[in-house]
Amino acid sequence: MPNNVEGLFRGAEPRRIAILGVTGSVGANTLDLVRRHPAAFQVEAVTAHNNVAGLAEAARAVGARFAAIGNPERYVELKEALAGTGIEAAAGASAVTEAAERPADWVMAAIVGAAGLEPSLAAIRRGATLALANKETLVCAGALMMAEVKRHGATVLPVDSEHNAIFQVIDFDHLDTVERVILTASGGPFRTFAKADLRAVTREQAVAHPNWSMGAKISVDSATMMNKGLEFIEAHHLFGLPPSRIEVLVHPQSIVHSLVAYRDGSVLAQLGTPDMRTPIAHTLAWPTRMHAPVQPLDLAAIGQLSFEAPDEDRFPALRLAREALQTAGAAPTILNAANEVAVGAFLEERIGFLDIAGIVEAALSELGVQPVTSIEDIGIVDAAARDAAGRRVERISA
Ligand SMILES: NC(=O)C1=CN([C@@H]2O[C@H](COP(=O)(O)OP(=O)(O)OC[C@H]3O[C@@H](n4cnc5c(N)ncnc54)[C@H](OP(=O)(O)O)[C@@H]3O)[C@@H](O)[C@H]2O)C=CC1
Ligand SMILES: CC(=O)[C@@H](O)[C@H](O)COP(=O)(O)O
Ligand SMILES: [Mn+2]
Image 1 (tube, rainbow, N blue to C red):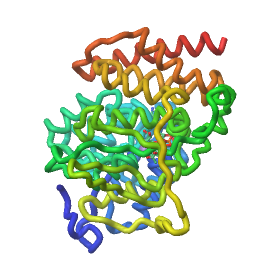
Image 2 (cartoon, rainbow, N blue to C red; image 1 turned 30 degrees about the vertical axis):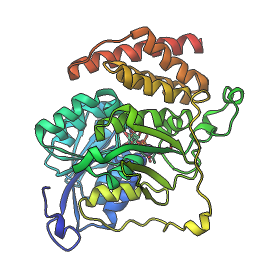
Image 3 (cartoon, rainbow, N blue to C red; image 1 turned 45 degrees about the vertical axis):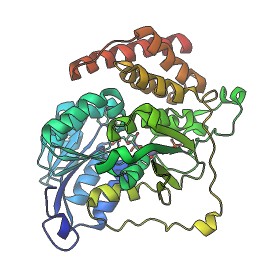
Image 4 (cartoon, protein in one colour; image 1 turned 45 degrees about the horizontal axis):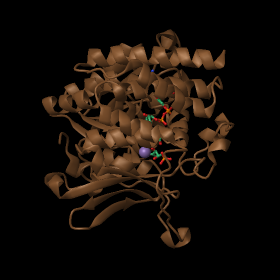
């Protein structure tokens, strides 16, 4: 591990970090922790896509050296917002990737969607530690990405709460002792809805997650349970387990963040108040631990934890993701890209809630099974799936 981790919170050299997607929900939680420990971290770079004001404010607050805005049309605005600060401003997708290339030991990947792939690969290719929230990158290019991690000696620390939980309790040195991992799912805002009632649910209902405060895209994914499908694929790549050793369990309270079942019958879990600052803090301080300002877990006040099996009839997205992982090749890339397009269209109120899984399923059958052997292949498949899904959105919304 680079950097003096032992002394991280005892006055040693600060850890140099970069935060990709600093204006988002995970980005803001990361920033909050970093700002509470100014001596422990030195921020090399921060990025956003459109939110110039948020990016400039974050860059100023932590004294970042470099700030990149993804939308090239926002360059002048950013330059003006950072005038006189000494913070270097840059714009465009290549500038976001440059932020990941700069010499930070630890990089938070909190961009939403496959747009985060190139920056994550840039951090991996220089052997950095990548704190990975951006699950879509692993879904669309997991095998290739993990091969790059191995080739360049990079480290991936899972930020997604379930995968971070598993990371905390899994015995990596004896993976053969693990029988299966169990991903918990809240079930989302529509867990108890009848199938017929899902047709008319609104954008506002879908983004209102019962337990977590998150960005719009992942909130809709939780509502369709595609989020758990993406996490199923994410777990496969992060922990090297076959689909038969990954289980999904609905747990409406989101207190048990996931579990690892061992061959001797022991089941180890990580619990906590649902607050992303816990998994983020775990990766920021790893392999040591730091304080996070999280409400202490009070199990007596909560009283009861409950569990139930997922319903893939009402929530077909979970089945589609499982099947895409079984099919392999281009299927997970298609699944992810079509889902991004469909969720975007739902958020713009151009299609209905049930159309999301319908569009993903149609894109998967339209594009069929094809192999992917390079990042270039991924780009081609991703574009074709976006095109196929976009055409269906047009047809539905016409
Ligand atoms: N929110 C959460 O609690 C959790 C999130 N995750 C995962 O973390 C990732 C981020 O989620 P979340 O923070 O909720 O998302 P948000 O929508 O809140 O934030 C997304 C961030 O990505 C930036 N961004 C958007 N599009 C692009 C692009 N094309 N190029 C570069 N940057 C872009 C946004 O910039 P701008 O603001 O300028 O648009 C923003 O900084 C997702 O992959 C999600 O699945 C995983 C577990 C929990
Ligand atoms: C906080 C986090 O990790 C989210 O991915 C969360 O798990 C979403 O909740 P669901 O379990 O409803 O998908
Ligand atoms: Mn999660």
